[in-house]
Length: 192
Image (cartoon, rainbow, N blue to C red; front, side, top):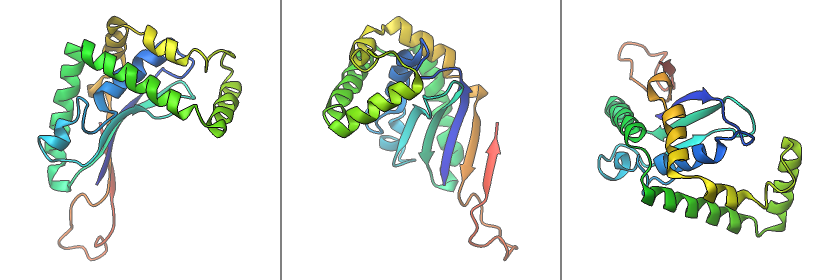
């Protein structure tokens, strides 16, 4: 089954907190092998992939979400681990090593992706449509590197509120023994 845990936060690409939130979210769950949520995959074997992201940075009140897949019988266990990990992250904050790693990763990815004329044209069009300053693309890496451990931790504490999240589950949650009509369907559910 697929699970999305999230809530809307007042952050967009135009927000003061955009880069701090992006770095904090990346350290929490950008890479299933090297992030705070990685134990769900490598230690507990509960998921193949898990991520944390601001789902649509073009608009304010975008969904901050943790997304993953899990076997139905492991849902409760996975949810417990995620809640604990996020709460620890909010309490302890991003480490200096995580901060440096994510800054390098985000800027490196941006530079590599910006080598393609098609990507540059797309980025310019996006910047124009979003009303971003003309120097936004040129200053992207500088803005990432300008974030501090304090600014990222402030964003983590402000936005990564797991207890305010809604959990949405899609897939076969439970096989109904007595109902032939339910056989083969994929019910969806939501819970606060």
